[in-house]
Each structure stands twice: as structure tokens, then as C-alpha cells.
Image (cartoon, rainbow, N blue to C red; front, side, top):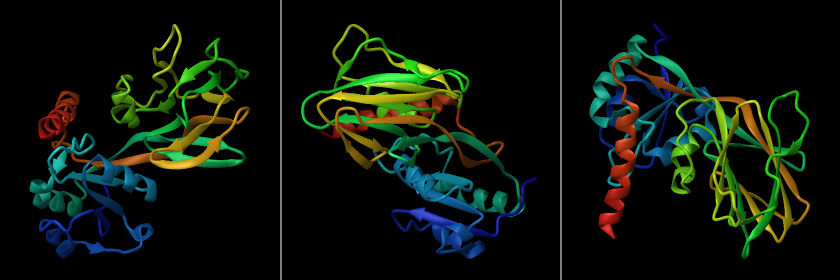
Length: 267
């Protein structure tokens, strides 16, 4: 049994009628830091937004909006009465879904949920990749040549189903690795590179300019010789789960595929 939930913060883009039932049972706080949990109602975008503002447990609830994959939602608004009962009685558990990605640049750290991204600014951006593959390793080249193209992204388990998947990167199912996926690069080797969760990746711009971003937020415009590093942080993204309300990986993958098919048909 987990502790009974008393206070909640609701992050929802719409005022769904089902949310009234939550407000009748729990104390809804305006300051997210005063909440026991954050209830994120919507799709994956709302869930990522919730993860950026809250370091505690998040309960993602699908709003079943058309075209939304809701990959991280095991439950929907139709389950609201069951959710209320289980939260009130402590019949849930907290799972560490993933560690957030830390991007370090010019003495400042930024924390991403989906990915760290180097994106071309005008034309191609050329860059080199270095890494420490374990904590005790020295920094050395990970790829022997200069890469040139639209850029690269670095992700882990959560972001692997976002931009990374659209860029033909692999889907990661456990929090045990980092993945570097290249974006329309020129050269004989274009495959993603998967490395351990203890690794630190360094990317250095060598020609032209590139934009350094995390998720949808911009950090800086990079010039030649500018370098940033990426690693998994100690900040864990925690989610609320219910023992008998869980979707399989195949179920979640089907939602992603179906959401893209709907978008295609709407065009």
C-alpha cells in the first residue's frame, strides 16, 4: 500500500467534465510544489510539460483526443472513478520511468525529458562526436570523421518514441542507455549509436552554425569550436501506476502507429 493521496495539481489543456469528480474528492492546489502528485490530462505533450515543472510522481491520463498517441498513458478519463478510489486508498505504486537528460553548456545545466538536439541553422552543420563510455574512461572520439548534415539528437527511453522515432532511431524500452541519432547526415555511416547510461557524450561544432535545443526549448546558437555535453541526470521521472491497469508494449506501439495513420488520413 502506498500513502493515500490528499492534494493534487491538475495539468490539463481543457476543462474536461470528468475532472469535476477529482476536484470533489481531492484538494486541488495552485502551487504544484504543494501537491502529492501531478495529474496530467491530455497526450504525450501534456505529459512532457508536466515532467518539466514537477519532480514528483505524475499520473498521465489520456484525454483520447483524435491523433494523440498518449504513449505513456495506461488509463483514460473513462477510468476516473476507479482512479479516485485507488488513489484515496493507496492502491497504486510509483515507478521510476527514466532519468532526465542533462545538457551542459558554458557552465549551465539544462534538463530535457525527450532529447538534446543539435540542429542546423542555415544549410548543413558539421560536428565531431566524443564520449566517455564509462565514468572512468577518458574523453575520446566516438566517431572517426566529421559529420555533416541537419544535426543529431541524443535521447533515452522516453524521447525514443518522439522525434527520435520520426528520425528512424530505435525505440528504447528500459532506462539503460543513451542513443545518438543522426539527422540527414552525409557519410558512409548513418546508423544510430546506442551507449550505456553511464556515458557522457560531447558534440563539437567544427563548421557553420547550429542550434542547441532541449525538447522544444532553445539554449543557444553554436559557432565553430563551441561544444556541449550530454548525460543522464540524477533527476528521475516518476509515474503513478495501478497493478491491474497496465498496457503492454504492443498496445502502446499500436497507439503510436494509429495516431500517425489518423493524421495521414486527415490531410
